Image (cartoon, helix red, strand yellow):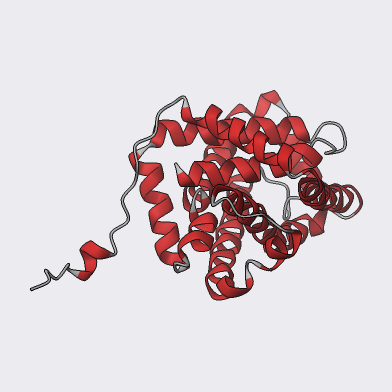
Length: 252
């Protein structure tokens, strides 16, 4: 008789061990994928750059709408990322990638992607509200803080207590978003899993490999910050590069 495998054991997702040298390898593999698909990479790089330019324009002209613009980017960004993952996935399987496949790969995962984006937007709203609470606790401005007053306070060394609290709150939510999304989107594409399972698995990866995950997040942050200068033009290269590298991080 064939031995029956318990359902929970059959569905278990095992996490591979990773080391501190792996993030550099992921970046190298992502760079290799980008070089092998220059036209697709340029399209996605331009898309990320355009989103950054829109955010900068909104921030300069109407800062009160910055949060709305960020929410719009959160709606588009995951689909762009999934397109890059689709390209790397096909190359890893020895299949020729295509622009058409990368642009439509989300269609069969729309339910899971919608739920994942909803989670991201809720976390962003909580992050924004917590930041305003921190600002209100440390400053009596007589009203809701604007983007300009927040920046003025952040860059004022005399407000070190506020800066520490603001960075702690921001770091917590940034870490939570990163931990939840680190492998969620490529996992949905690769395994067609639901958003909750993908987020839980991503959190497991972060908890079991916290040091490597923090290193990976730091490298991503550093590259994105460098790409934003000047005028976010560096995203033309860094955007697709990190997208391809993130797929290899997921596979590892």
